[in-house]
Amino acid sequence: MHPSQIINELAEDRELYFNAVSPPIVQTSNFAFKDFASLRGAFDDEMSTYLYSRGINPTVDILRQKLAALDEAEDCLVLNSGASAIFCAVMSNVQAGDHIISVHKPYTWAWKLFDNILPRYAVTTTYVDGTCIENFEAAIQPNTKVIYLESPNTLTFELQDLEAVAQLAKSKGIITIIDNSYCTPLFQKPHRLGIDLCLQSATKYIGGHSDTVGGVLTGSKAMIKQIFDREALNTGAFISPFNGWLLLRGLRTLPIRLKHISESTQKVLAFLKSHPNIEKVYFPFDPDFSQYKLAQKQMTGACGLLTIALKAESYEQIEAFAKSLKHFLLAVSWGGHESLIMPKCAGLCPEEFDASNQEHRLIRLYIGLEEADYLIEDLTHALARL
Ligand code: PLP
Image (cartoon, rainbow, N blue to C red; front, side, top):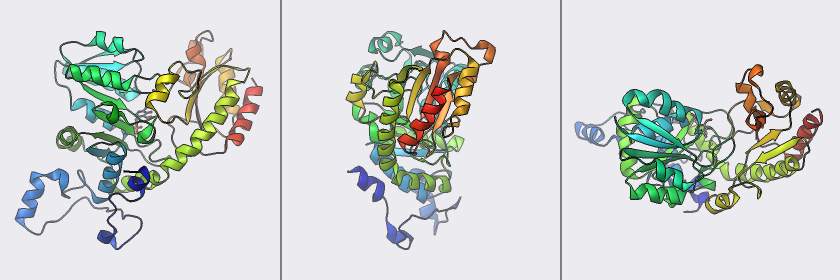
């Protein structure tokens, strides 16, 4: 199905809601039944009935069908955050005594799950450099149940060869999970490459306006039903009707926002690459990127986030650079309308800063919906002050 059809038409049955063009927010916690038999039917199959909104809700269900189709997946859950999508996907596939292989430095709340919570239930994790398939192979143990991927990650954009990892995992009966937040289903289709579960933070590009937190999890009917019946219903991880509606509204403009941001990012990239105060730029669709070929093979686009290594000699210099930017907010997250800056050293005390360590001088930029020349002018001034 064409993405335009999915985003604009799929699952929209207007006769059910007064022919309104915009689907209503069905703001109810509860649904009533006309007789015992239909209530019993809902108990038997909560996933295909409106019983209670800590399960399936009509507004969210429209979004659910669209997001499943965009990911080319059989089914989908729309959850209240990307972190809950990570939690539900992983918890559903491990039990005491199991082992996980994860890429190095996955998103913060993924490694906190692996390091802080799962060891309490006797589940261990090995981290590998995911740029090389042999590292996954070497880390497999008889009790490995899950391979956790994030391709690309959102600081230095290391990729994994998704097809190769999926093939290896399938041959050993291991479940693969990917965080696809950077690409969204428009720029990468992990299920096509054999990945079992695909998740994303909908807070980023799907929402697109920095006003909603949400998460998406897609996979086979059987895997998604298991997660629905256990982890998601038990933790109450579903998105609310209002936030689901905001994501639906955001989704309408996803293709046009990604197109605009892709074009601006390329212009900003070209400017940054030629600037004498910048040592290195990390961006997966830069021909100089170490995994550019793989990025071109498995992604159809890249945009928004890119990272620079600033030629700075001190913590204060980086702080001054961030401060002199007028159109980039100092903030975490990304995917909204506003451009952002996130210096890696903001997580350090000034005394810990080591200028000889490039990692300390990394600054992640998010290019939002502003025009590229407006942002480049801002960067020009701030860089000149260095
Ligand atoms: N995955 C990545 C790569 C992220 O950057 C984030 C949030 O920053 C998440 C997952 C978690 O998403 P959320 O903040 O919606 O819980």
